[in-house]
Image (tube, rainbow, N blue to C red; front, side, top):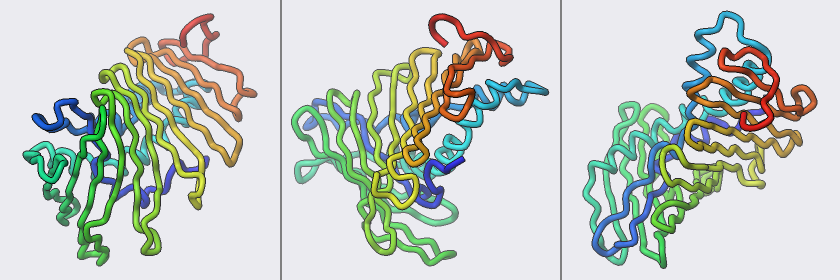
Length: 266
């Protein structure tokens, strides 16, 4: 199975962007909700551990979700640390923008970052800079612009573009768009730029609607799509994948046993 994104490309990924507030001059916009940077796979973890012999449909659904989500979870550990550090910092409004500065610790190294939110129409334009020194590897970044982005409509929708230094050149390695009304009503799409050396154009969309979850993985180079749906309360779910049962929707029931798909819903 093709990797979604090389782990090394994301390990320096810093707090992505922020939700915004229309009272930009009076109150700083809140940082983006951390749940927009994860795919919650606790359902698969718990169910797989409880089953001695999981059935085919459930197993194939899990095998589509797990590889991508594990890479993302590991890769986003650092942004979570930095975001928490930013939450402890008091933003200041200066030179027409809200500004945060903070220091976070990661693997015995210190990361100094700056985050700015510039009011623009009904939203904010975001930028984050990063300074990092790793004594073990001698890697160092000095005021590197890690991401740019925009939030609008009260922070309920937005996008960001992630950059990393590759061969000493700032390179766009990952993009995202999102909408979020609440933790149980959201959608985020992560996409690799078409010009990337590996997996160019591939994308993953994760949607949550109440207890229902939907994972859509598109592999452009392989001309394959994978859609996995599950209900985190009932335990039922389904998989539709180009390379599984001819793409026919295949379901499992509340016990994760293969089952006939219902006429509606999962």
